[in-house]
Length: 529
Ligand SMILES: [Zn+2]
Ligand SMILES: [Zn+2]
Image 1 (cartoon, rainbow, N blue to C red):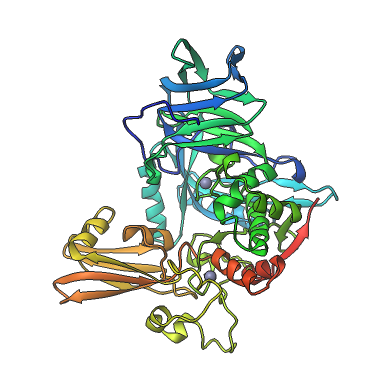
Image 2 (spheres, rainbow, N blue to C red):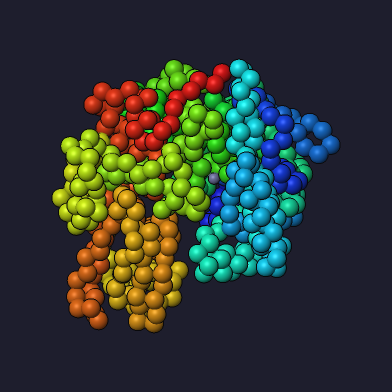
């Protein structure tokens, strides 16, 4: 059994922003590419001092100056010299469809007149199907400025927030990292120094091993990959690894990482179609400015390489081959989450960006009435959370309803990591979305108050809550709270497909098409071979 050979003293928690480079400029929308032959470039890891590589076959390395061969065995690649990749940080403030170019130009003009060095960045692609259809995923993002430091970009984003404009910051790689790795293996006798970036290929899968520092795992991970591997230098000077492979092979490593392979087959099929659609919708957008397509973490899709492959999830991909979700014209952003808590949420209540008609909050149950008297708001949050209805996803005992308790000292420590309000006195709820998820909260402390907006920042503010659908029970007087108990429902953002709900629907006999149409309002399943 292959085990990690290296010893890594320090692990680095790397922000999702950091990475390598492929494209020189951020202009998408090049001539259309065939959908069936799409490949993805996935960032498997970053922030590594050393990467272990093993193969029972010889490995061919493409390095500067030609090809090199490594005999079968295990090898450690360690960063010896690094010129980090260089990035800039862009503040985006609005998005337009390609058909809205005139409106985009108008908005651009307005920003420029206000003194911003605004630009339009086109992301996304035009794919064509075998039947000659064009699937256009292009979007026009308005950039209000680009900065060498993240803090400067965040400051500008904050000033827009003050005007009720919900911007977002993205890193763009402007110069690829370079460096030298020391290669050592097969009993320490064989060593070499190679320039990076470099690529590795073998006749069979290659096993990689690295420490998964920030993810809370103690053991290094060993996983096999079948695609072309590249090792590069990240913006922080550490090693990063990418895999390039075709979309369906990639999905074989995604599906069992996103949904247990022993779940009902119709749930797996629904997940397969949603994941395939999500990949196409993200290509050329998600990490395009950083020079790759998708990251291997939950930010994009959880991905476990060949090691994750399972016969039941492979079969779900096979029988849904070519199936994607559209609004009749474009891919819909087929996002999903673990457990919606009984009601899914409108996308605009969770993320920046305009409302998407396919991502409306829906009840995760069959309702007896249609007069709105069953909504979390109508029922009241206390009843909704403490005396919950039976939903498709209520078979998930851990997260359909959950509780998290903090002493006043614990909560103060957690909140003050991000918001320096001093000892926490109370939490004031802002408006809630249709599912009962909070759109904002105000934390009142002895030294001030902080308004926290949007689903993910709210969850992170309180130490990483499972969801933003919660109430807080406070014990102790208003001036001296002793204990805060968060009572909540669901796990994840709550937009799109509810995975536990898909399981529940499948157990009740629903087919994968019915499941998908339930969660994606107005969507249709199309076959695009
Ligand atoms: Zn990602
Ligand atoms: Zn649900």
